Length: 150
Image 1 (spheres, helix red, strand yellow):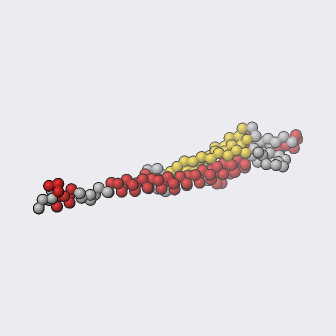
Image 2 (cartoon, one colour):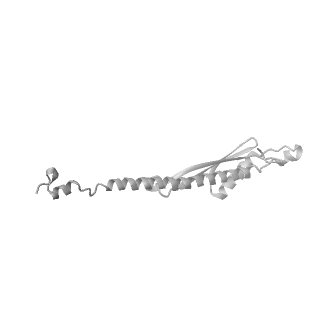
Image 3 (cartoon, one colour):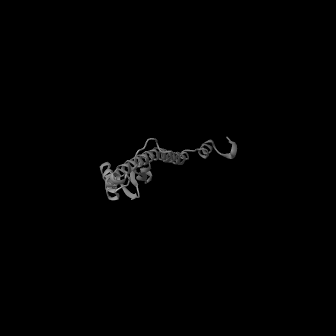
């Protein structure tokens, strides 16, 4: 019996057999889905770590901004910081929270930068084990505040 295309039914079946051709597509699609899910999950965790780092930096700066020069304040009502004490207070706060960071005191402003590392959940499968985030906060002492700053 002659078949269209000049092939026997058995050969024609082999010519249209697609076994194994879907496998590379499924593997690539699954990898893309894992990468996208990793970006969503680990990106969210990194964002939360950044917000936490910013909060810790702001609190450490506020702690440092409490190092007032009391003698100058009592003598002339001048609000200014004792830089060494401000640095120590901010670093002590960072030590109690377990964070690492840098503290700078310039004039009457304490600036703290916190560096945190967030371990990844899904991106670790692709070789990215942790993400580094930083947060910065500043504070300065103020006297007689009756309204919020704009």
